Image (cartoon, rainbow, N blue to C red; front, top):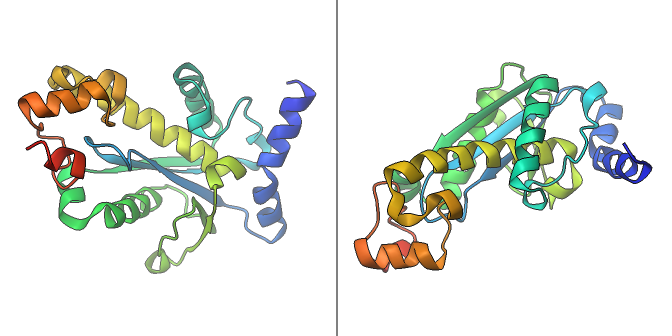
Length: 212
């Protein structure tokens, strides 16, 4: 790796380094994908990185990485980490309990599925109550840009959700899910206007509800 990339990754590991020095040796980063989508599930991922293998080249917030590189980094993360998991919450549940509650639920589910119990969970901005698991949670504003663990979780969640939406694109080809991944694009809104929502659309969302 070039010096600039090494320095960037060292900066990205600074939160974890400080937490390690405080005695937290098993840190889980958690993030979600699909919060603002009109269709499909919310997917959350949790990952406990190996402290000796956190310097994964090009690892960054998933939104800053191309789809090709996300898939490459995804493989590196699951190969080198100590434990990882993911969970999803369906559009039906999102409609029933609200987006905010669904977001918290899916992140809790992802943590609960880790094979190694973390000493600490860090998340991108959202606080999740993990008291019943006897785990402390700390939200970090812009965590996916500042923490290597949260950035890694963001990539896992994004890649997994994109793959799910690709599968849905074959079942519901009219909406262009292979391109928009369920988000509101011109083609997507036109399809909603012409044929209405599919079974995986979030009926409580304004952009979907208006078109019914």
